[in-house]
Image 1 (tube, rainbow, N blue to C red):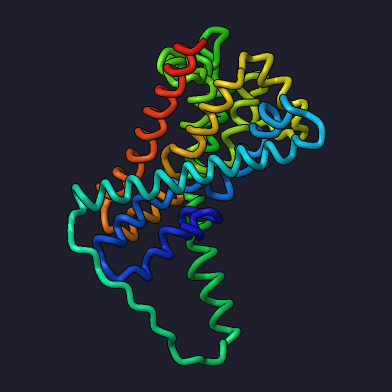
Image 2 (spheres, rainbow, N blue to C red; image 1 turned 60 degrees about the horizontal axis):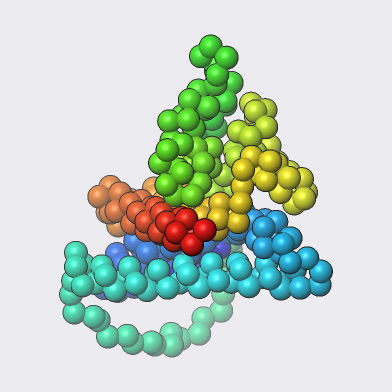
Length: 281
């Protein structure tokens, strides 16, 4: 779980240390319930704009920190809940004992460490990322720039998803951005900005105030921000993590389950939040 905060793909690989095949699968399937480093910038940006910005003053940083911390705790809670559910259903079994042994100390061999970390870890993960990232980048460009009439394919997709997205307290562009962000979580916000600004290319902005103005002008509210943060936390893992799960778990069925589990949880929780908010308002 802790490795997943850096990269869910690395967290999945780290599950190799779990001896029990059943418990290893549970660890793999629930690793994406904690936000990786690719999701943190988006979460922090939303917290700064819609929560810290609403408070203002010297407490703004504290408020944004508390909001992001709450999202992290929600991810940890969901990890434990789904792990318990899996252990009582499809991955039922007897819990294994935990034995911690201290291995004999050996002097590190710098050469082997560098070779293993670069070739066996870094290049492996980057190679998996490129398998999907390059084709996805081409597809995003085509969808944003190929027009049918005066409307881009991206707008058609967003319009199609709009009714379902509204049930989740989002809009069609946000949901489209999450789908197109499958190669990497880092590009979800740039895709959202690209859709709103109709630029045809990914938009990378660092000014939180400018980003906030664009989001508010396109109908974002506190409820939209809350649901977006929930779905940022609870949605399908990135392509690299899915391919890693397929390799580590030994089949596409487990990769598909790892895709569906957090996504269904995110959809249900967003719908419930929207329903409660509408009833209160």
